[in-house]
Length: 315
Ligand code: PD2
Ligand code: ZN
Image 1 (spheres, helix red, strand yellow):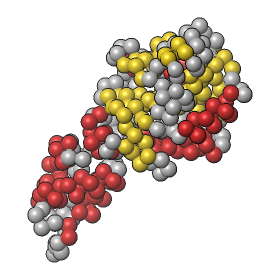
Image 2 (tube, protein in one colour):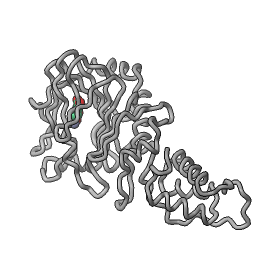
Image 3 (spheres, helix red, strand yellow):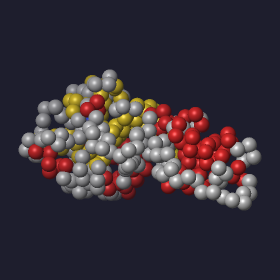
Image 4 (cartoon, protein in one colour):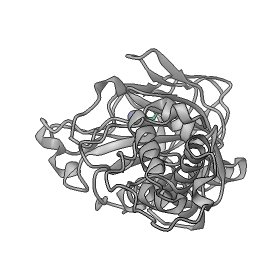
């Protein structure tokens, strides 16, 4: 992490407070209270101390130990937190800030996950190795025996319809259904900073050659009455995590046609994209689809995240 990569207001805040003689721990505590991740707060303070205090300010006994000024800049740079419930006035961290803050990988409680790319707007992040090969294989094994043709929510009637735009088959796991699901749900929650109970049940999809999911939005259009029922179960969807459970010989990318992006399926990787801002705006640039599988098969696990705790079926 470079000091220059910190947000300008955070650089100023650190410099001012170090100049006022605030000690290292107080700075770290203030940053943590403002929502910064512990590792990031400590690194930022260490860098700033190295830069602005020749004597190593925090280790110097001070007669008077002033408190850090309360106005800690918003935690816009958060290492393990790609999306977080934030006060509306805060801006999202830029992709560079996410990467600068986390390093090129993120250490969750049980697994190191690589950051392969991050895009600002729309927010799209590709995680490498979010799942292990064994976890992918176990999800496929448990799902293969209970697949059914996939459906889509009918925005007019609110019913779940079989539709030619979605030719996969699928199944789901209740939230917390077994130890594997609990582990994965906790990992995702930690990575993206959204509580586990805001997540819908993990859905598994299986595509055979030719199967696809035509471009669509994952959020529910609030202008359609048929969506009232799904919106009542925890509010709007805010983001999606698509986890790839196998390598696909050809085709099967997750495609974002409006931004010219194709994410290729690779076992264990996961693409995260967010479409709802804290002030309720929906980002239509997140139009996306599952392009047809040309050769082989494709398995994915999808986790959709809601504004509030999800209370729908299988929660
Ligand atoms: O299969 C995919 O890559 C994919 C793409 C877009 C799945 C979904 N959306 C979905 O299930 O919403
Ligand atoms: Zn989708």
